[in-house]
Length: 145
Figure 1 (cartoon, rainbow, N blue to C red):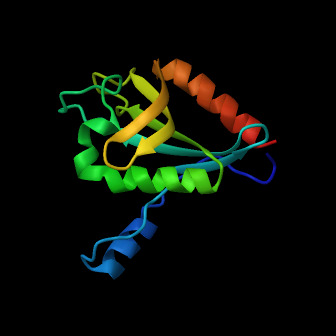
Figure 2 (figure 1 turned 135 degrees about the vertical axis):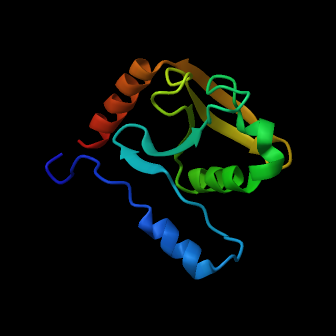
């Protein structure tokens, strides 16, 4: 861990720069939220999916298949990259701290996708914030070794 550092400020400048340069052109790329290499599990891709407080669904009940018609390409691209890297793809539904659903987190391990229908095979687990933090920190620590 000597060659790494704690997370600091979020770097949104790269996103803003690309948005400016594309000048309204549709993007043909996706942004990764997190990519890490675990010594036992190999590459792990995390995509964090924010559930806004005003939404009807909670992090425990939301699922990408509900809005597949609006955002399929993002999940298809993430899945394709995960296959190319032989990586595990985790989708993490969460709510911001301080909101009524802050203690609900759902982790979905995507195992198969039908590009028309959505996620067809998965493993899913609901966590509270403390349980998720323990699991996530363990994976992070193991990936630093």
